[in-house]
Picture (cartoon, rainbow, N blue to C red):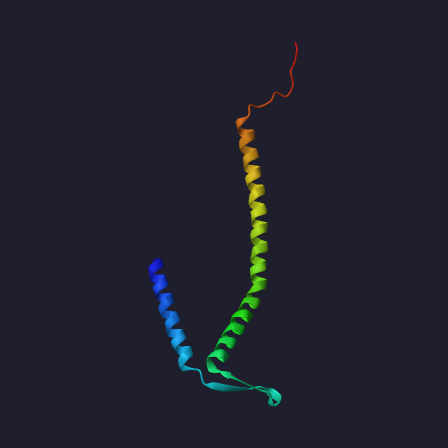
Length: 104
């Protein structure tokens, strides 16, 4: 399985590298207020891909932190339940204690 994954990775790298070599023309990106930026097409694509990935990660952060908080709360609850269960088992295996001792 590792060999297949590495083979696919190498093939994708070669395809993307070929794509980058074929698209080295200069493009001009037009912003508002007359601002322009010129760069090779592959650089523009890479920049927008990376900015999209960063924005996606930032959008997921609140959900990830909420899930981590929920997991820690559930772990604490589970630890309390296991402690109660262990105490109940220990109480069930001990002999009952007499209420009092009478001398007659």
